Structure formats: C-alpha cells, structure tokens
Image (cartoon, rainbow, N blue to C red; front, top):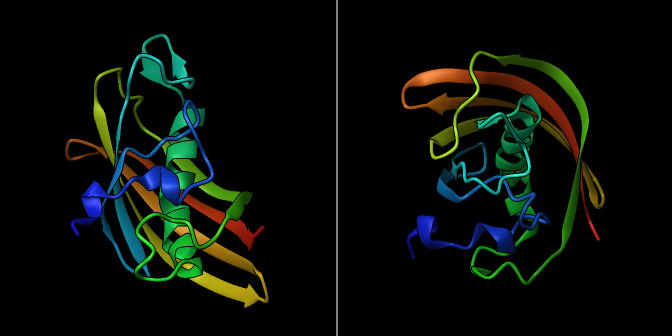
Length: 149
C-alpha cells in the first residue's frame, strides 16, 4: 500500500478543524515528510494566512508521527490497535519566516533528535522544518510526551 493513501486521521488524535496534516509522503523510525493544504475553513487563519500558531501545530502533528508510529503494529493500516495522546512539553526553538496563504500547500519535514521510553510514556525531542515550495518558512525544535490511553 502506498503510504500517501493512508488516512492520517486514523493515527493522530486530532480531528477537523484541528487536523493539520493532509497526508504523509515518507516516514521511518527517525524522520517524516508531510503535506498540509491550507483551506478556507482552517481555524488557524489570520487575514487569509496560516497563523504562527497554525504553523507550530502543523510541525507538532507532523513530528509526533515519528514516535507515534512505534505504538502501532506495522500491518495496522487503519490505526485501530492503539490510542495515543501527545503533548508539547516544551518549544525549545521556533523561527517563522513567512505565513502561507489560503490555497497553498506546505511540506513539513521532521527528524527525531532523542527518545526516552519509560513504560507507557515516551519523552522525545524533534526538529521540524516547513517549506512553501522550496522556501524554508519555519524551523523549530520541540519536546513531546506521548503515551497510550
């Protein structure tokens, strides 16, 4: 199965209007690449552009998939094997260079910097970069807590 055809909402706890990832291009145990199309009904719009808060939420949702996938079986293509909750525990760095407009599509690439598992809770640090076409518009580093519910 082509990973881009997976329904990402099966693997993230978010639902519209808070779902900030449209699809996943690539994912492995250390990195992910995602796409998000900015639509008119997005709750994070400000004057026709995706707000800073929306960009941070997009980066967080994209990045959390790296660690979150390890809580599911490889053949669980429907995301029924587990329920996760994730929290941003710290935003260590965020630089925002531009705000994309309604109708544009952003690409977010994230990589795992560190991971520590303590039973059912995982603490991790991830770095994400968001692009509009080839232009870097966001660079961030965040810490997360992810656990099963």
